[in-house]
Image (cartoon, rainbow, N blue to C red; front, top):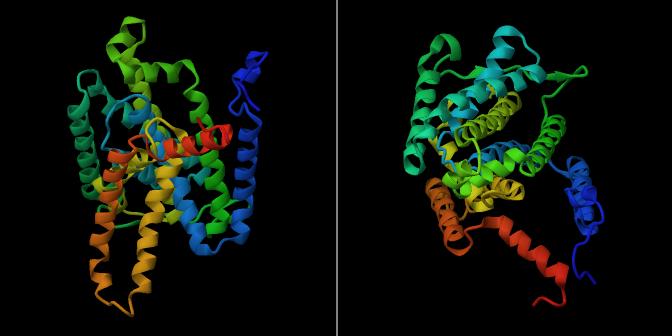
Length: 347
């Protein structure tokens, strides 16, 4: 029986998965991800791809909100920059998708630096309003700069190719999205264990105290905005190539609120929380739609009230988590792990 965690060298102590049970869970997860596309239907593959893209964007937002303590309502704007950047690079200049995606993410990171400049003077609600203004500005530019984005018309992006195969199916695109999502999660997990991650946490907890011990608060805030925007732009670029159609309606303020709900429900300041929140927010509308279709014959009126039901359930879930479990699904998962780790001595 475990009576503590003891290591004889720093390499073991700093490992991401230090305990045997953690390594087993990670192995089962990887095996499940590899087997899943061979057993799933196209419908579930589509949902899995949406969850992978949403997880990348949620991790990016969690870096800014959960780890650095900066409020952002501009998630949709940064995703739009990444999506239109990748789409225009491919359509207008013929850039391969594996080059257009990181370039678009870098462009989004630069935009994040610009939006992050007010963070030196603004905090809390005022910073949220500043990022909301960025959301509205990007929406206006996208819909009115017809010479570049096409305005309200959809930008059609050709299906990407890799090794001579067209990635025009959910099953083929699944592997790219899963690999990128796992790489982003691994990067973020290691980043938070570094000097940069600890500086972000210090700023989140008390920026004045962080400045007193030598942390460059403004510099690290800008770095958080740039890193977060890079990952959010990466998710937008992947979405553009996955959907093959880029339209401004996919990147409205509702998208920003949805991603903020993901990290609140999943758990602020956790990588697993980003995944849990993204999974719930993606699957919840799908489950409600499934129930609505099953009631279509017996209750035709259900189709008319379905959008309102989705909004009501969405808001109710957020309220329940804020009241009952502010630390989100990640906290519930930790409770489950702790219970089985010390069972049968739960006390």
